[in-house]
Length: 494
Image (cartoon, rainbow, N blue to C red; front, top):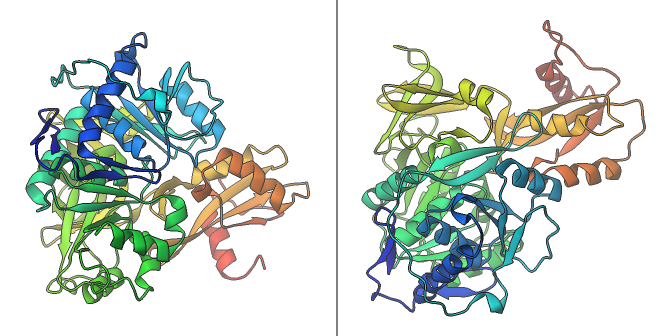
């Protein structure tokens, strides 16, 4: 059994109906249960007034029902917005207010105190009841399939709107590019708020394979993580490069122990040679892919396969060539480097309720949507190479973060006069986030930590903050963050 995104229906339904479709943090779901669950969601939604025009918020972490709720919204042509439990309440309510959603699927056992009219706990036994409901396969018109909220410069997250046709294009490309099948078992560890996780979902449902979810607790325990990989015979690993670092040090992480693991797909941040070389040593004949693409361009825009034969061709791993339907070009015509621009039908229609920002980042050329990535790139030998961010936006542990958002939240604390945030890098990779703070008050570390945790996800909390009596400023009258970073490296603040 598998799902055809273009036809919007399940196909080959008599094949492996009792095999595992999703192994969640709470329970396993087989393929026959998947379609039944979607029917239940449909009957539930039609009881809500104007549900078709209401984006559905899905709240949870790595429950099997979270994936089912995503697929239900896809099957029913409804916009969905994933929210992870790591988000503080203020951030969740801000997203709710931005989307005006009145429907939320709660995939946890938490009692939620949120500003949503209709909250349905889909873990409750009473949720599953047999009903006769007809679900149409037709996609009436192109519509926003999902909205992912990423870090924003104003201290508020911004929602990236992706059309259903864009998702279908990605699913179609996956079907033609990868050689997966119904025996493929996909590791899923990225939060559902990060589109890396959506790649696993699309592939597992397109090929009729199995999707194995790894929650935060298991991710923090390498031994248990490896045991789960082995238990379910995972064959496809998808993650950011930084996520795999810790496992490369474990002797069990090798072909002899994980004999089914054979494909590694990396995305979300720069991939370095060291990771690839270790994988090629530990997993002989494995396939390694470097995928590039911001959230604004539906998961992957370009891809490059790394092999023993080409790994030493270049100093840095290329982001490769465009996938089908995508186009990359540089902001400087006829030059080999510049800001990377993405063009194609897979590009987002823009940020939700951000008209001014949309004018800055999106434009149309030759009838195609285009997006200014903010990445500096080089084009040589027919390949693109990403050289890093132009602005303050960074990638840290696979999460896209704008340093200005961290600064904005810190400055919102009533005892703080000013602040700036920098990212310390080593070989182009972010290792630490540091905030410099100016205040006339004595602020205890725990006091500030509690405040920041109430406003920001854990991965945006600075590794260190330093209290300074004054800042250095540039000629524009702005804090010179680079100068502050240089002084820090010189040990000035010790």
